[in-house]
Length: 458
Image: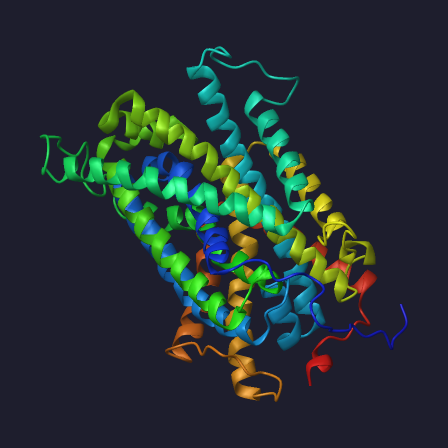
C-alpha cells in the first residue's frame, strides 16, 4: 500500500431513513432482549435479588459513557460510531483496533442473542408438542443453536433488503414487548409489594453476600450495548443533532429502570439455587407464578421477539462498522460496496451475519456475552479518552451540537469504570477479548499501516 494513501471522507452514501423512534427502538430493542429475557436466571442465580444492583451499576456506567458518546456523535454522525470517533481523534491504529474489535464484539453479541432466541423457540415448540424433551440435536449442533442459525440468516437477508425494513421490524417488536412487560411487571410487582395477594420473597436481598454483585455486573453489561449501536448507525439517522443524544440517553434510562425492577422481582420469586438452573428462559417461570399459563406463554413470545430484536440491531450495527472500516481503507473495499437496488452494504451485512451464525453453534452463553462486553468496554474507555483529547485540542472541525454535562468528571469516570469492569470477567472471556485486540493490531500493520485519518478533518 503506497505511503501517500489517505482515507477520504465524503457526504454520506447511505440514505437517512431512521427517525427518533427508530433510533430509540434500535437501542431499547437491543437491550431489552438480553437484560430481561436472557439474563435473569443467570444473574439471580449468582446474586439473588441483589442482581438488581448489578444492573444498576451497569446503567450508571452506560450513562457515564452515553453522555460523552452523544457529544461525539453529534460532531461526527457517521457509520462506525465509536470506531469513527476514536480513529479521528486518536489516530488510525487505535481506530483500527477498536473497529475490528467492535465488529467482532457485535457479532459475539448477535450470536449471544440468537442462542437465547433458540432457547425460547425450543421452549415454544416443546409447549406446542412439536418436539420432545430434550429436543433432538442435529449432529453436534443443538436444536436451539440450529434455530438461532436459521434466524440469523433470515435477519441478515432482511437487512440487505433495506434499512427501513430493519426499522419497521424494530418498531413493531419493541412496541409489543413494552406492552407485555408493562402487564407482567405491574402484576408481579403489586403482588410482591403486598398490594394484592400475600406472597413473601423467597430469599433475602443478598443471600450470597455482595461479592457476586460486581462479577454479575461484568456478565450482564452486554445488556447495555444498545446505546452505542445507535451511534454506529448514525449515518442512517434523520436529524442526528437532535435524535442521537435523545435516543442514547433515553434508551439507557428506560431499560435501566426495567432491568432493576425485573431482577428485583425475579430474584425475590425464586431462591438462587432454584432460578439458576432455569437458564436463559427463567423469566418465563417467573411469569407463570404471577400470571399463570397465559402469562408464561406471553413472556415466551416476548422473549422470542426480544432476542430477535437484539440480534437484528446487532447485525445491522456490525455491518455498519465494517462499512466504515472499508470506507477508510482499513478493510477490503468490497465491504463498502452498496447494493444498487437496496442501497445497503450487502457484503458487510453478509459477512457480519455469516460470522454470527458460526458463533451461534458454540452455544456458550456466558462467554459470548462477556467477550462482547470486553470488546465494547475497551471502546467505551477509549471514547471517553477521545472526548477529553478533542476538548483539550479544540480542532476547528469539532463542533458538536450537544455537550456532555459534568465535563471533565463524567468522561473520566466513564473511562475508568469501563476499564475497571473488565477485571471482574471470567479469565477465558478476558483472554478471548485480548486475542481479538491483538489480531486487530496485526491486521493494521499488515494491511493498513500507511492509512492516515486524523488529517482529513483539519
